[in-house]
Image (cartoon, rainbow over all chains, first blue to last red; front, side, top):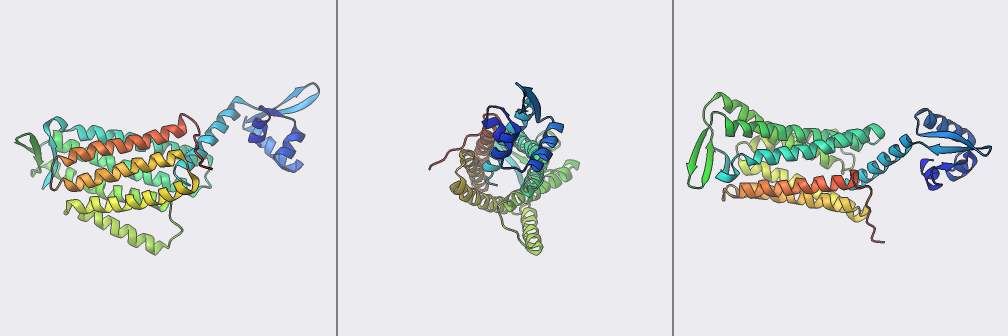
Length: 77
Length: 234
């Protein structure tokens, strides 16, 4: 999900995210609630459209995830 | 029994090298714990944490023992340009004995835990027998100096071979650096074995060990500081 949002420049419409992340509507809603609660993403409104945007906290989290993947790669996990 | 041997200029410097090794191990330990918190499903992190904790404690035991050897009530003899520290019967001896014993046993067990990351599931009986033999080897290493270093080298070689197989498969640049670092540490073990014949090889071993841990640190920093760097041949 987060990679899909980032691939779209950090913000994406919920419907686009649903298709990009290959999620059902109920799954998307559930995951989004969790990510918003943890301040990883937030909802914004622009020109009567709703967007999902990665927060600074979310960007830091993604960087950590990338580091973790690279760390695992280094040790050959 | 000779506990430590070194040229005058090197006397006590091995403690500094070991402190640097501990710092490298601690860095990796802290980051392993952080990543484990992000992904608790990955049991390999638990093994990594167990391995690096054990290795860190083993080095701390070694540092403590060497500190006592250098700066407490031990007999020091000057033989030309070589300074040899002999054990003396003192209260410090018990601490030195247990410290070095803990270092040898824990470092072998720590390395074995690291090796387990790369092995398929094995029976508890196999694990127990292997662990028992390694502990025995660490203990006997206290009597037969080379035995500990030979055992440590063999386990380390097994780790390097496993890592090399992973490198061929996944081709991470940092894995290659890690393999170089571990290979240097393996070379340092050979130098420690040669101390039986050439006292100076202890210093060479410590310096090579420092280079090895520096390479491990470098590969680790490349992951955490400079971001993902993945080299693909395809």
